Length: 325
Image (cartoon, rainbow, N blue to C red; front, top):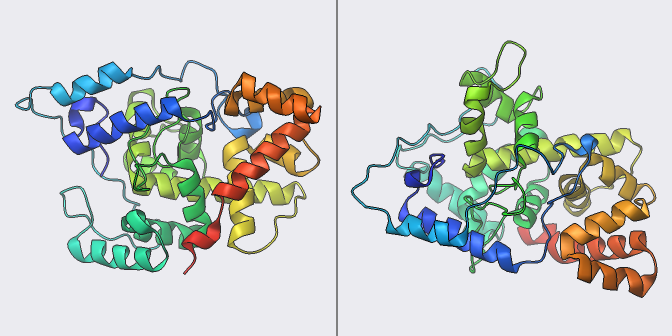
């Protein structure tokens, strides 16, 4: 179940997750996609939709709020319309989770696949993979690479990147998320249509934009949207003549490149390499100007330096075998 848009709608545990993710993001290298992307890849990284993050001090005050202050009503959990063909989704118990039997089944399946502390997401991963035709191990790998994590490896659904509008398990930017809600055939568009968030032209209504963006913090919505976005990226790569290969690992690598770089840059990366200026910009955003400068100086070429860094990162993080049965 997703949290309300405002901080008062979060439980103490969820507030702690947000605070941890905020503090953690300040210490990590710039692996997220601030300043990345192109028009072909979805949202431009600069623009009016990027919200300034709350400071850590502001977040800490959330835990000091008056406990007697009632929280606003929690938005209804995302479900597909009955007429939309999909893998059946287990009902929710109204307390923020699946019914007990469904939770136990998901956890059992997740443990078998090596999901560890993320076994509770096994049901959503399986449903999204079956609906889109992706290998479930590939989908889990993409989510694992994108999601912020607690010290025990648990994915943090309430995470927010302070350097961009990226949020949730899939770290979707605001514009990309809206695009998925407006793109025909997606799980998210079915939900948006069901809730009356789209106008007669299939665009998200201005007054419903905040509610739509709040769905990024719903783990199932984030997983389903990640699956749709990955499938679209893979289809775009195939249309561009890029050979993806077979198996969960190859699919995960190609789909992650599309998710991380955006479709346009992913195609260029796989078909010969990025322009040196673009490669330098991406590397600066990902590891900082100082680190990027050292790497570029070491090899004498920004394109080569960026490619080496990204392939090394993917080699360490995109490992579908961790989620194979």
